Amino acid sequence: MSRSGSFSGKCHPNSPETPPRATRLDGLIPTYVEMCITAATRGNEIIILTISNMSLIMTIIKRTGIHYAWVVLAVTFTCLFVASTLRSVPGIIMLSLEHEFHWSRETISGAVSVNLLLFGLAGPFLGRLMDLYGTKAITAIMLTLVTLGAGGSIFMQEPWQLYLFWGVIIGAGSGGTSIVMGSTVVNRWFRQRRGLALGILGAAFSSGQLIFTPIIMNLNMQFGWRAVTLFIALMLGLVVLPLVMIFMANNPGIKGLQPYGDNGSAAPEVLPDPNPMRSAMANPQFWLLAFSFGICGFTTSGLFQTHLISHGIEHGFPEMAMAVSLGVMGATDIAGTVFSGWLCDRFGRRWPLAIYYALRGVSLMLLPYVESTGQLMAFSVVYGLNWLSTVPATSALTADLFGKQNVGVVFGWICFAHQVGAALACYGAGYLHGLFGNYTLAFMTSGLFALVATGLVMNIRE
Image 1 (cartoon, rainbow, N blue to C red):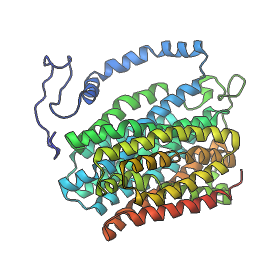
Image 2: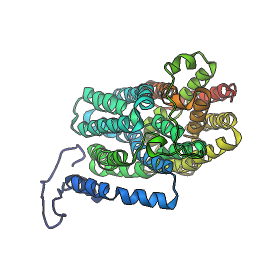
Image 3: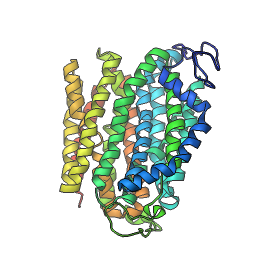
Image 4: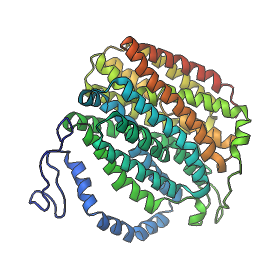
């Protein structure tokens, strides 16, 4: 594929250079993606092999004494780990889309804003469906939708197609592979170590960013943005979806177990309340959580994952330096998010949450003055330590205040507030860039809002 995205070369099935029954796309993508395509042509054999060995895997799990909650957590981690790539892509391919199609920064930011808004809006509805019908089926359907959206975006030529594939289809579908899913899983499967488990899932986003951002940046630079979206479609369709279909379980009772940390044989299923949002919205604690988490979105995904790379390139940093910066943020956020879960298990949620927002606000207001690579990496470490550290505390507070059986829908609406903030920051930063030619005002405003969130969190009761 050329930089413009046109395909080159022909297919050579069964050539000496390729494995039997594989299809090689010359010059399109590196070997690791080609292996995924080979797997696609032999998908039936792989799935049959996995199913035939499933009983052996389950026997090993039982003999080693591993609670099945950790298996479900591992599958959920993988799902969020790969899906996190979707959040990084717009910022990486933004300049490529501008150069190929001559679309404005505001137009592209608008499509990403739709994506973020629908990602958040889908959360509470999907969370409610997960509460009622289980996580497995809903997640599988949404993974299929996102895979089709990513694959279809390869062929887009007009702005409305960008809004359709990346804005609507991927935006709505990715709501099924979000922390709403993770929160639902953890609060059903864990009675102890909830904070740690939520921290691990929060780290899935960070580690996904750490691993995949340099890869997809290199793909974009070498083969164009279409190779990036094809890579994501293959990873979701050939790796994540089969794992969810085979190993995911909706609740411990299905496996004849209690949640991790309980004693007994089988956990009685607690049904969700008929109208959980009516009581939640009448509680001021809900609005404190929602507004503070909305500011979390305003100061993270909508702003950074869409505009940070463009901001850095405009300040003279190379593309790969900015990709490494995001990777460093991901690496430090893994430690920060897991540590946040540990803190929440031992010292409560409110004070750590307030500290995260205060630290974030100060670091954002210093970002416009970062001029050297050393300063950029130092900023990445400080900011990364609290990027997703807010998630374990906010999710655990939601479950404690409104019931674990309702966490899907209640936390889903709180996550919607997060995505409203993200969408406003995404479009607003693009608009301000059009007015002033830089992102300074956008970063300063976000920093001030983070300090406001600190005050909101201090008023939450545990």
